[in-house]
View 1 (cartoon, rainbow, N blue to C red):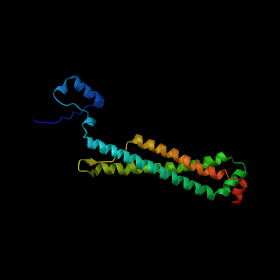
View 2: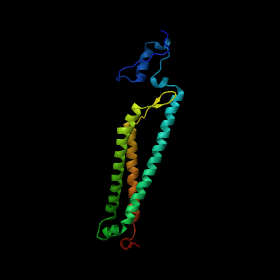
View 3: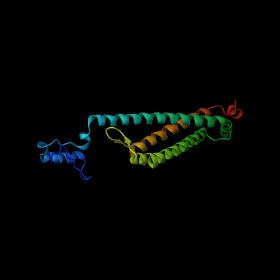
View 4: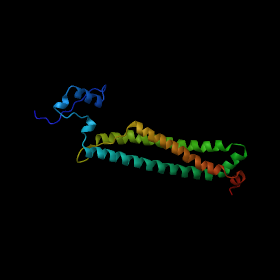
Length: 185
């Protein structure tokens, strides 16, 4: 009975900090060091956690930039090849805003399909795979943590950036002279 550490699991009705305060109020700190689970994590592990979080944010930011550039190019080439039709639409009275909105909705469609496939791949394959086959680090097993809240927030950012990336090339093409667009000059 020479235990050096005791872990206590409690109900979810009380958070870790509240449970620590309850233990301190009973005087347990006279006999032992009372810490929450997050306080007991060694510094190097918390540093690794922060580093992986930072790397994940950087990679996510790069992914958003690359995807927005890709959507911009796809919409721009699509609008450029349909410049004659855009000119005809403007000639018969369709407003520039309606044409821009249509191209923006096209980019939103691409984004929603891409986000859906990405979420399906992430939560349908990657997370379960790494839960069953964790990466064997020397200090602990590594699993893929993808909380739904931050993931959906990044998906929303991607959707907004994609809308802007779809609107810009459509606006560039729509602002051209109607006659020049029809004659493809």
